[in-house]
Image (tube, rainbow, N blue to C red; front, side, top):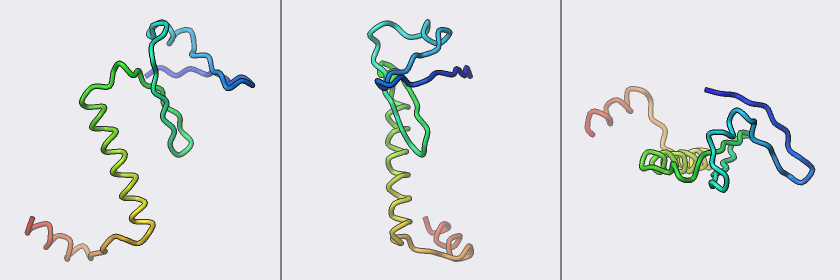
Length: 88
């Protein structure tokens, strides 16, 4: 993994560090994700099936947490959960 440091300008622009720019073509589209204070860039051209699955998993996970926060989950003891799991 490579790590670089950059700053945002007063116009909201950031510069991708030189050593990482060589891996991106001019005009190439990048996806920008923001979650819990993190910002992630990913090439839009690299949206393969696995990435689509990752996005769906993230969406479903976020929705599950929201349901949990609203108290919409059923709670089971460990024993109850294992019994239900055996039936599946």
